[in-house]
Length: 149
Image 1 (cartoon, one colour):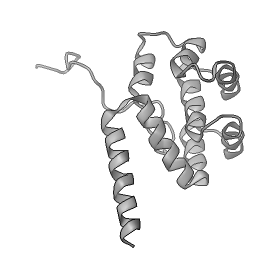
Image 2: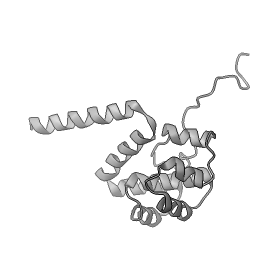
Image 3: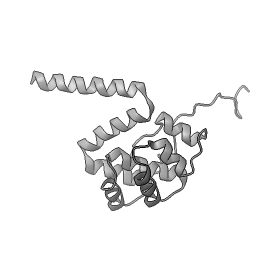
Image 4: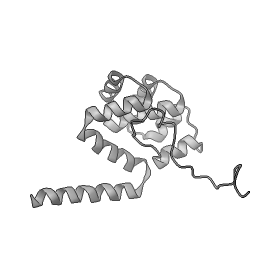
């Protein structure tokens, strides 16, 4: 029992430190842990979040190396306005070169807001429809309309 509790504590600390470091790699590592714990729940959330049938999510999971890669196929497809099939083709051609290369080949320009979002790993698997479009809280300077009135 003590070993089990110790293992859980170590896992939580590892995940917390990875999350604290931020970035896309940490996000993908944590997403893979979540997916492996409940692959059916993971694929259901991805399907709902991106508005695709569960069968399509499972087909993509079957063609990529890691479950988190399937999430990224749908996420980049949405950012690049490309269907998942096109993203999978680019993924297969450029696997191992990194998500930045894949994003560039999908037409996401380096320096763009979408590319910076990718590098930050500013994504979440919420299972909520449309949440993939919302990167969360903005990082602006607060100088738009309505500020400093």
